[in-house]
Image 1 (cartoon, rainbow, N blue to C red):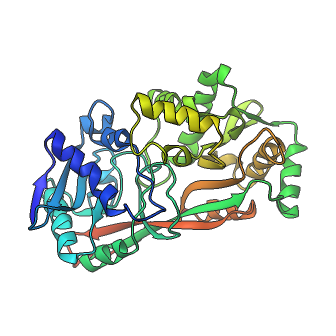
Image 2 (cartoon, one colour):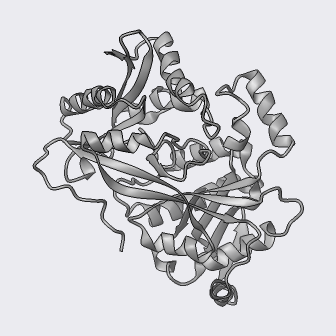
Image 3 (spheres, rainbow, N blue to C red):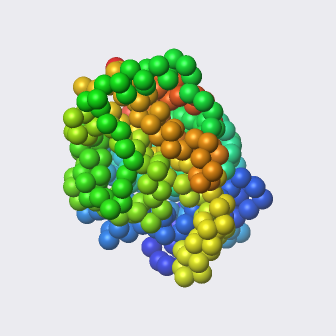
Length: 388
C-alpha cells in the first residue's frame, strides 16, 4: 500500500471521490458539497489556516485503487488549551482493513508529533464543532448537513488502533407538532407572565441587530466550554452571511430581558434534504437544482443549529418560554412545511442541555463520538469534563 500526500488538483478530486465510491451502494449516504469539504483546506476560506496547519493523504492499494483518505490539522487557538497539546484527525474514510487504517492514522500521529502535539482528537474539523465533528456510532440514518456518515466498522478500526471515546455527541429528534408536556408548559407560563421578558423571531430587515444579539449571548453562554473561544463581530457577521440565503425567519428565536439579549434558539431548514439531489456540485446547474428542490418543498425537517442562555438566566425557565413562543408560530401552521426537528449535537459532558432538550420531547436519534488518542500510552486517559 502507498500513502500519497494530496498536493495536486487531480489528487484533490480523488480525495473527494473516496467516500463517494465507498458508499455508492448505501441508500443513507448523502454526498456533501465538494466546496464545503474543500473550504476547510482553503486558506482564503478558512482563517484558521493563517496560523494553523493542515495536511491530507490518500491511501492506494497494490492495484492502484484508492482505499482510504485522512487529514491532520493543528488549530493553534485550541491546541494548547488541553492538558496535552492536541491536534486533530478528520475526513477519515477507509475500507474495512485494519492495516490500511493504521497506515492512515500513523501518518497523522507522526505529522502531529513532529509539530509538538501529544494527542489527537478525531474525527474532527479544522473549525467549529458544528461541522464534520465526530464518528457516527449509532443511528445510521441519512446525515444532516456537514455531519459525518460512516459505516459501523469505523469504530472498531479506531479503537483497535488505541483511540478512546473522549465524549459522545447526541443528535436529538422530535416531531414538530408534538405538544409540550404540561410541566414544561407551566414553566414557560411562569416566565411569560413576567413582562420583563420578551421573545421574538428574527427579522431579516434588522439582521445586523440580531447578529450582534447572537454574538453577545454566544460569548456569555459558550466560552466556558473547553476548546471554545469567544466570537468576534466579524465572525458573527460571516456566520449570518453564510446562513442568510437559507434562513427562515420563523425558525430563528431570541429571548430578551428588558430588551437585553439573554438567549437564542436558531434553526434552519435541513439542507441535506435538498443537497442530496446535487451530487456534490454547487455550480450553476447545482444552484438551479437547489432553488427548484427548495421550491417544491422537499425539505420537511427543521435543524436546530445552536441554543444558548446566558448564565444568569439559566435554570429559570427562559428556554421553556422561548420554545413555547416558537411553538405558537411553528406548530399546526399550514404555511410551515416542517414535520420534524433534528437538533445539532449535544455532548454528554453537558447534562443540563440534554435535560432541556428531553423536557421539550426530544429523544436521541443519532450518536456520534469524538475519540482521543494519547501519544504517550503510559499517560492516564481522561474523558471530557462534565459541565456543572
